[in-house]
Image (tube, rainbow, N blue to C red):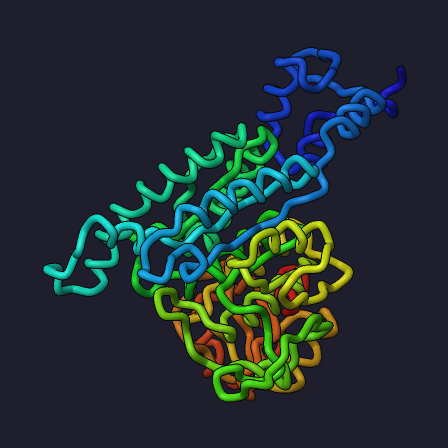
Length: 414
């Protein structure tokens, strides 16, 4: 065979979305056939494509299950619902999907065995309840998935796991490896140590960032509501569920109420924000009734489901762009004028002359959000200045011929 008939281990790692050292493990275990060349390996293309055809996944689907779905009428953990989701996810895996489960319910589970009312600090009370409840929640999931022949893994994340690129790659590598080995990752926020200012808004956001990180094909948000209504169903009894949304506009936001769920943090606005980010990253997104039996399976398998589908942009994001999109922290922002906004949206660099103001603190090479003067979030980019340096640079009379604030190669349009 000529060298053109082989892949390098680096090529295979990129195609599978795993680390090179993992490819070596696959080769040494016989999972992927290869020929040794010195200290490295080369992998015959034909055999590799045979391996792919035998192990091909339909893609990744991130499933978020909300607190209200998991609790019964007495606000206690409904084990029948946990058992049902375990069964439905097992069915999806047998159909060829990789599934990541983002599950709420730790605080509610903890409250069943520990009152917590003597802890006056509400944040500390929630942390204690989550620490107790997370163990119980994972025990139930491990048992129910085990009866389906599946192993589970617990992953507790913080917001900084997405903003720091090294951590981002580490989490992505671990989750990808779990999926490649048939394990179901069960993810929740690490409530015990999460910083107050760096928390996820809710698990809708966590699930969305995971979907973006992993390049998922589908994001399914299982809620206690039937989907997006054309008006607030609390105020209008004739409100109807919108079956499909092609673009999330201001008119779409006006359809939903701004209330949050009783035991959870998210409301319909939160779900729209999640769908907006995910669909722009090329991820088909659904908000469905998670209390309806079989609704998750029907949604993923394109059946007749109860909920709302948000259509994705045809073109997704590359790996580096996924980190930029998932990593930006919203409290750091640069505000720009309309001329600079037009240039950025035409894939040009952001120059100093177009910057109007700076909010929040960030270091050089940090990810920042860029807004126009009307408060619209336009792009995410990597800053070539720290916030302090940028503030000082804005005081200069001559702002021309200065280095770009954000280079065009380091921008993702939202």
